[in-house]
Length: 500
Image (tube, rainbow, N blue to C red; front, top):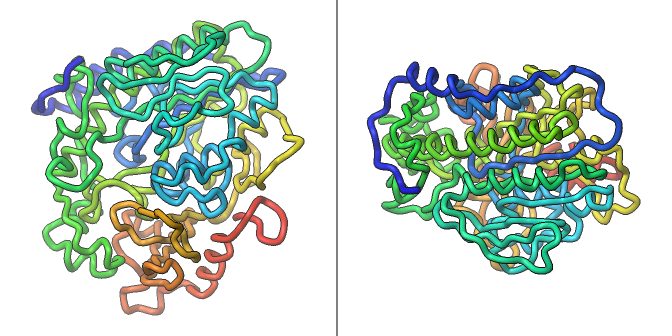
């Protein structure tokens, strides 16, 4: 495998024709009631994959969408509760908000109680458990990923990536190097499915590739160098690229008049000028690495079907956070606007999630563990920490507002807190029609800036209604702020302060 060289993009039509021609043949599954017993659970978690430009572009991830969206449900209001890798992965593993699990940046993963996470609950429920890919951002091979019967874990990277592997029956782990990690992960996950075939107990497996994460994450010259940031298989060097259509958040708030256009935004973002050229390069890196991720999903799903495991497997596909392509002149993640927080989410479980459907319920990353337990029909006899999420199986209640959070809000920063790129701590409430945001000062307690957006008339969040000098269109900020601060200290689904 070798890094590609930048090619001129072909036409979108040719790209779609080529990709659709090679879509997998998905045998139809009967739309019957769910099979008796606990389903297998396959969770596919990508890294830094945003929703806009991916979910609404048929040329992106065509095989994945064929397997999961055409045969399952696409959630249109799914969010990464904290738009940063390590905190959000901790939320996924634990079913708890950042303010409860304590992982406040990419360097505090050890604050998570690793004994009370998804594989422990599911192992106790009678599941075989497996991990292929990333565990948590600051793992760095320092310990054995807990509560997994088998694993092939790595820290990240594309070429010649190091994995620690312990298969079923192995006495001790070994080290393997993957020529191209996304391809290797797909093949390894497929081999684990072969091992699950025919066993009496159900299984849970998380598959977590590096894609479409960049290699160079620090700001600097390499932040706009395609081949420093991304590597993909040579087979995709000449494949036509889906056309990038920059949103108004790029062309307006990242455009030539950005200084004036961003005057209503938090002061942190106003001087940012990543440039549209660099945004397009980041877009290309995402698209090329996602082509390999699409193959990875196809490899796994094809094996799942061939082994007879698909009929009763709950399959979920999502990301740990979104990513900016020069929206508002920014790159990377960690901010509260749509490009950072909205997540792709496709879910398939034949006979349970209607094929080809959409679901507009507000879903967050704290909801995955409660959904697994609901699907398994398992009530843990002991829960060390209250679970903050709720199940999103069909027919389950919907929430009206979704809490989003970043950093140690309303409390002092813990020792060693680094945050991400100097982003101030913030809190947000998001509903289907609006979003309210509070940014805090360095002490995390005093509000520095407030923003409110009408998502119906302003889906790109260009016009902060709290800064337009028109009090007639302002919401009841006092009520919003009170609800937001109450949510920022919530715990569990019941009790004195239940989570929204």
